[in-house]
Image 1 (cartoon, one colour):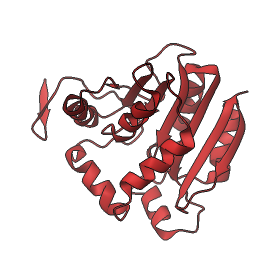
Image 2 (cartoon, rainbow, N blue to C red):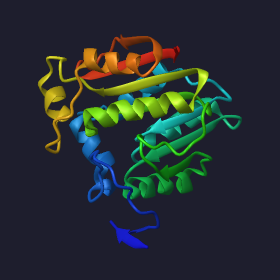
Image 3 (cartoon, rainbow, N blue to C red):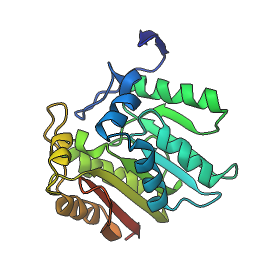
Image 4 (cartoon, rainbow, N blue to C red):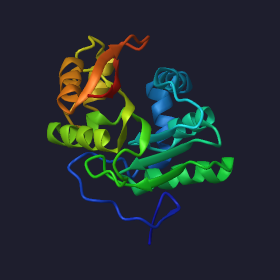
Length: 221
């Protein structure tokens, strides 16, 4: 067992070529709110609205970070639903567990990789991933999309939100390469990757945030 940011970390970080947020996980929510100019809650509400979670559904949040979005999704699926969150950073998962304890939530969080999702085939009605894919090199994006398709039910849905390198927005471009990792997304290329992974009805949704590419898939092909 190790400690980071005053938290007991009981899970080891798995090896991955993707970028993980570890040393400053404790400050992630604050930094995100500053970068978004105080619009963090509004952005999360917009993601939930676009995802359209229904009561009783099973939902997986890939790259869940500190769990904020997952907990908002839990409010929509209710007690009959199920929300799981995975992230490669033990420190981020520790922060998510703190929120669960404070809110008496039934959402569950664990350390896991998008390229090796630790769930069985056809488990989820909905998979959501927000502002995580720019942390992955291209081959891991493809591997991750294949894993997401595997764990979705035959009529399952995917909502992927990330910074768009081709948006024309300066902040979107800067954030897509934040931390020195130039794995930002061209939305056309991302849509093509999702289609190649076996998803149907893939489209970019309209957004008030021009730097954000919100890409939805109606179902597995």
